[in-house]
Length: 365
Image (cartoon, rainbow, N blue to C red; front, side):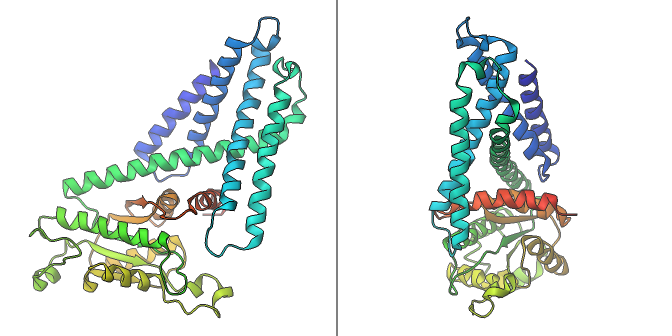
């Protein structure tokens, strides 16, 4: 019963964060607690209900440790399988060591999980007669798997919260007042499919804002533009479409000499223009090299133009939640919408975002 209470408390805490502070790192941990506790409770209940009476696994002493280890094994296999898939799918110009590390690490997680399943499946383990130190590896990998599941689940919940916020504000006519499309690496002067999806969603989002404003009206879309140029220049209610991202060489000195690619924002603006967006409706921010700088520098440009917050960020779904944390740290009011990645590399990018989330948590503010 105590485990179920923990699960419900974690769920309630996650719901509170989603309502009051969705752009916070802490709901990842409350979601993790809810998921982990629920699995332990579920397996404990099944073991208690199905274990024969002559096996002491139906006691609280035996069944709860069994449920905990079984849950850890499942989580370990889950994250290990994800790592193996991430190693196998194409993801741009990825170094060989990264493929090897993901593949070996993933196989290790899966092996630990399956070995633990065999061990805890014994009568002795069910009865609680196991050495705790023998299960440290599966508990450790299981914890990582549980945190990964919590990160995935809350990322999905945040996407729902951000979309609901956007829809409600657009319908109420209270903003957001600009769209900031976050950059990503371009290859040989061309946008990757991943970045094309960001541009597409950015244009769709700007369309929605344009058509919802009573000051724009006349049934045209953002791509069609406004025929009355004087009216366009005069209104301070105009939602601006910002493409943010600096030169690829500024991201990594190692590719400075081998890349003549234009800044990411310029390539995105060119793609938008090719899709029918008027160039004078686009703002280009071409100095930033990180997500944090994307938001901070874009906000500075918009505020200098008299376009106030809130703003809406646009990126891919795997990046939206972590990008919202940077948006909050930059002191910007708004949320981040995420679209499909448009490539097979989604599992790899999700795993990278998960690692980056904890890396940034460990950094000083």
